[in-house]
Length: 209
Ligand SMILES: [Zn+2]
Image 1 (cartoon, rainbow, N blue to C red):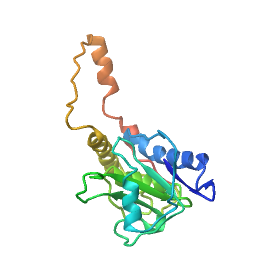
Image 2 (image 1 turned 30 degrees about the vertical axis):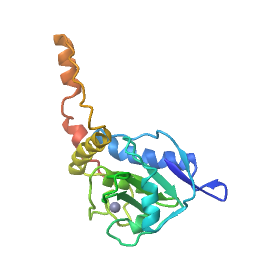
Image 3 (image 1 turned 135 degrees about the horizontal axis):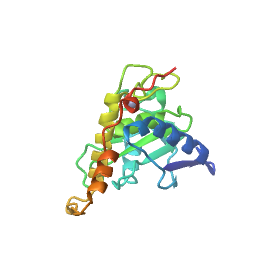
């Protein structure tokens, strides 16, 4: 979490950050994805994001380290509706240029007064989701309904998207070492039980309102 500071005051306090993260996890949990705050750091010299230069400058801070870099700022101003969420005051940004220093970097920006669901929405983009028309869906770029959620289809995408996100942060040169572990028959059965598909009840979409 990168928090802008204006006149000596952080634009959001810890309680606000926590509320946004809790909101995101409430929607992500049923699909086996969760996010947590790794660190909260002060964002210097930036309180609004409106120009291409400002957007690029933030990419220099957003290292590809497996963290979703979130910038809480005073204001997020977007030139086009295409690459941002004007009405929900947030954006997901990814660098598509060729500069090796910031290649493929991405981050999320959230305005200090954005709805609490905005972070969940932008994390949705980060993990590969596009927009949805349904006002009860978290990926609607409209003013969302009372308790918007992700659909089961989006949930599956989120999960694989989150995995790809982590894979992108992994250094290419080091292939993952495969560890061989021997399990007893009882342990194997227990493992299978743990990774079994969710039951019908767990899969059933939550009805909102
Ligand atoms: Zn959006």
